[in-house]
Image (cartoon, rainbow, N blue to C red):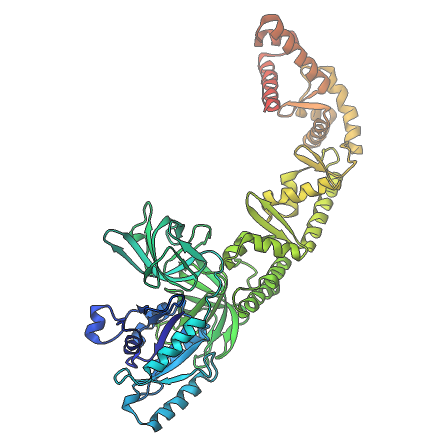
Amino acid sequence: MIVGTAGHVDHGKTALIECLTGIDTDRLKEEKARGLTIEAGFAYPEMAPGIELGFVDVPGHEKFIHNMLAGSAGIDTVLLTVAADDGVMPQTVEHVQILTLLGLSRGRVALTKCDLVDETRRDAVKREIAALLADTPLAGATIHAVSSRTGEGIEALRDALWTQAAVQRATPARGAFRLAVDRVFSKAGAGLVVTGTALAGEIAKGDEVRLVRSGRKARVRGLRRQHRDSDTARQGDRVSLNLAGSGVEREALSRGDWVVADTLKAPLLKRIDIDLVLLDSAAALKHWTPVHVHLGVAHLTGRVALLEGQRLAPGERMLGQLVLDGSVHACLGDRFVIRDHGGHVTLGGGVVLDGDPPRRGQRAPKRLAWLAALTESVASGPPYDLHHPLEAALELRSDGLDLDSMARNANAGQATLIALTEALGGRVVTVQGQARAFSPQAIEALETSILEAVAAHHEREPSMLGVERERLNRQVMPSLPSPFFRPLMQALIATGQLEGHGPFVALPGHQAALDAADEVLWQRLEPLLAANPFQPPRVRDLAASEGLDEERIRSALTACARLGRLYQVRRDHFYLAKAVHQLADIVQALSDEHGTLRGAAFRDRIGTGRKLAIQILEFFCCTSCRTSS
C-alpha cells in the first residue's frame, strides 16, 4: 500500500511521516535549509513479512504544486494533514480538489499540531474538515488527532495504517508494464537509473523495455521495489530500474517520460480525447482555452477543445480534447489535471479516453457515443469492461476497427478484443499479426457493395474478364487497407458469390464479350487487319479509311485484345491473334535454322521494314519475360 500525503504548507506532513517511520523524507540541501519540502520524498518502513507499506511525502507550497501532482501518481491511500491551529487553508482545499480529480477515494485525515490548541479548537477544525470532504470520495474519512512533538495519537495512526496495509490486497496487474518516470540519475558502477510508480503490468530483471520518448530499447539490469532489491515489480509499486542498452544514456530520459514493456507499441500523443470535469470554484471554461496539463508525471501546456459545446459551466462535465504543445504517452483511464494559463489555479481534470482521435468527424454523434461508452467503462473502475465501447466502435467504423490501435489505447491484449468482437457476432481479419474487426452490419454492407460494384463493372465493361482486385478495393472502400480487403473478397469467392480469374474477380457465369456496337465495328475492321497481317494499319490509318473517331476505334480494338482476338504489338498497332501466332512460328523456325535469331533474316522473311521488325521482336521478348515471371 502506497500512502501519499496532502495538505497545506507547514502543516507537518514531513514531520508526521518521520514519526510514523523514523525516516526523514526531505533529502535535498535546499529542503533542509528552508525547512520546506520541494520534491516528493519517499519512506518505506520495515514491516512484517507479507505486508508492504510506503509513504510519498509531497510538497504543500503552492509554488510546487506541479511536484505535488507528480508525487501523487500511483498512490493508493491519502493521508490528508490539517494543522489544528491553522485549520483548513487554501492548499488544503486545492489538494483535496486534486485528489478528487485523480480519483483517489481511500484515505485518512491527520489533525496535526494538536498540542498547540484546546479541545474546542480541535472540534471546530474537525467540523471544517468534515464539511470540506462532504462532497468528495473522502467523505467520512477517519480523523486522527496527532502531535509530532509530543507523540500524541501517533501510535494509534500507525496501528491503523499498518492494519490497513495488512488487509489491503494489491490490485491485479493489468496490461503491459508502464512506469511514469519521476527521477533519472547515473549511479557509479550501475549506470542509468530511473525511478517512478508502476501504473500497469509487471516487470522482472532481464526484461526488455522501451523508452517512449526516444523509442530506444533497454534491458532491466537491476530492479528495486519499495526501496529494496527485488527480482520483480508490479502495478502499484514504487520502482527503481537500472537500465542498460545501446544509446541508453542520461540524456535519453527525463522526468515526465515513460518506460514501458517492449510489447506495448505506445506512440507519443499530441491530441487526446478526454472526459473533462470543471471544478465548482473555477470560472466557466471556453472552447480552446490555453491550460497547463499535468498527466502522470508530465507537465506541459496546451489547449482544451470542447466537443459538445462552446462553454463548460463550473461543476459540469463534458467530452473534450487536449491539444498539446508537446507530446506525451497516455492510455485509457489515465488521470489528468488542468490548471489556468498562468499555472496558478486548478481548473479541473478528468480521464483519458482516446489517444488517436480522427482529424475529421470529432463531434459526429456516433463518435461522441463511442467516447461516452469509454467514459462509462472507465467510471466502473479497473479492470475496464470494453464490451460496450467495442460495440459502439464497431458501429462507428464501416471500414473496420483497428484492434491493435484500440489495444494500445486501452493497454489490453489483442486476444481479449478479438474474443469480445466474436462474442458480439463480428468478424476479425488478421494479417501478419495485425487485426481488424467488423460488425455483422459492416460485413453485410461491404459484401453487398462489392457484388454491386462487380455487376456494374460487367455492365460498363462487358469485354473485361472482371474487375481488377485492387481497383475494386479503391472503388468500394478506399479507406480499408488492401491487406484486409483481400480476405473479405476471398470469402465471397469461397462461398461462390464471386469467381477469381487471376488478378480479376467476376460474378459467376460472367463471360467476357463485346457489346453489340463493338461487335459490329469489329466485323468492319477485321478484314482490314487481315489484308496485311504482318503490317496491319494502325489506329489512325483505320480511322482515316473508315471515317471514324480514333478514340472509338482504339476503344473497340482494346476490348478485342482483352478477349484474345488481337495483340497490341506497339502503341495503336494491333495484330490479329492468328498473325501473332504465325510470327511466333517464324521466330522459332529462324532460331532453329541458324542457332540464333537474326533481325535481318526475320525482316526479310515477313517483308516489313527494319524498325517494325525490331518492334515485333521486342514484343515477343517482353511477352516471354512476362510469361516466365
